[in-house]
Image 1 (cartoon, rainbow, N blue to C red):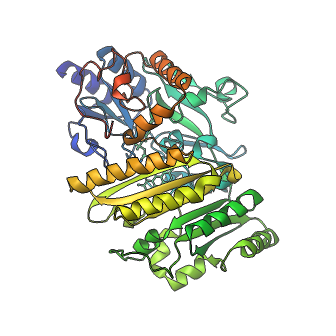
Image 2: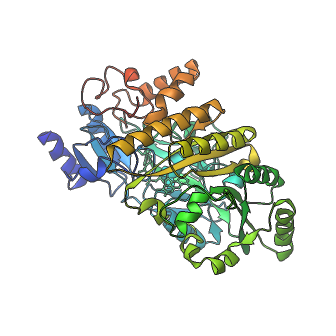
Image 3: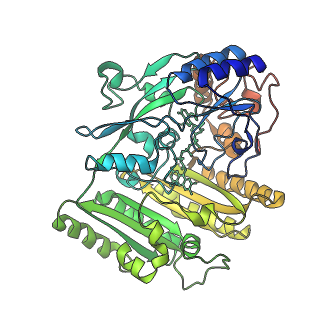
Length: 480
Ligand SMILES: Cc1cc2nc3c(=O)[nH]c(=O)nc-3n(C[C@H](O)[C@H](O)[C@H](O)COP(=O)(O)OP(=O)(O)OC[C@H]3O[C@@H](n4cnc5c(N)ncnc54)[C@H](O)[C@@H]3O)c2cc1C
């Protein structure tokens, strides 16, 4: 280890032993202690590190801010955390509305850079400092996912580094240097999407931007039952008039207004708030959209400006990106969720069953849902705040998440950012050929199993040569 440390110091200038903050995240996933942390300040350090780690069979976990809410950046025990937050260059092609971004580029940072060119993006509910590149790699979602799909669909190519230091560019940029589309070449970009850093470290990613419209409006429609809100979103999704339609469960509204102790919902209170977001360059186009919304909504849509006059406490959440303090800064500190992409025709059933399961477990039933890509599919997400200091509560939340995940799988939904807790259930249902090809791709790209080795691989599947399979580390997968 001493010699390894010296070589790491030669590459990075310094090596940190302050591993504790990297051993865990905000979720219920068990902590794992890495041996050290290195911070990249130049992309050229990454291939040097990966070659060294492959030679020594030491696990490497790439990480930016670790706010994925799925335990995905909790490192392998005894490995190296590769902190990529220092690589934060942005290069925008305003004509083709695409940005080459490095891992450390944040939502706030990209918003500001894109704004200089009259462009914008869609935002997750993630904190403003979280990584755009990492969110795209894990196929996240945000405002504009109704119009343009999950963030994986917004990626037009990557520049990545494999475990042996090989550099690869994918998409049209592989031929022309211009990152305009994933094709018309074989889609090697997919080898890095949804793999959680197990196939390579992405150094740059081509992220799609969109024209900023002259007018923009967000309106809230309170719906007395989740089913009504979901029916409204399903009716509006295919019209093509809206950038985003999102359903937010009542506990979020209460927490955002500062109510800490939530009892059962008053039956007179809305169960779901649908937020409709749309924009246009002319007032006439805006009116068409507003009229269609008013026609289908069960109650008059309330523009966010009017809502803020009634409830000024909501002001911090009106502009995106925003920091949802009510989820992040509460006393117990824990935040977790189960989220899955799946069919709209079972969304109402999944929402109702999930709400019931959360209520039964004594948790505020916070559901967040949205149709995506014009309604070709949608997301259901169940969010829990919890006390990370309490072992009993942590275990209860883990158990609830696993049951919610199984219920979602039964409804035809596929967990996104698949956490370790749900891995066995997903693997069990996975097409055997798919599983086999996944394993072959991994072995081909990372023969020594050094790249984020605990992700996407139940312990029994780890190859004999991988550091952890050889007993290189302790720790255990949650529920695995
Ligand atoms: C309150 C809250 C709300 C949120 N709401 C949303 C939401 O609405 N929609 C949404 O999609 N997300 C949401 N998120 C999740 C999150 O913010 C995103 O997933 C985030 O942008 C990812 O950035 P990160 O810095 O947290 O990535 P990290 O957690 O550091 O990394 C995520 C994963 O990517 C891997 N990785 C990181 N960098 C690289 C790289 N260069 N190459 C290869 N692999 C890499 C890591 O190993 C890890 O597996 C929310 C988070 C919070 C806390």
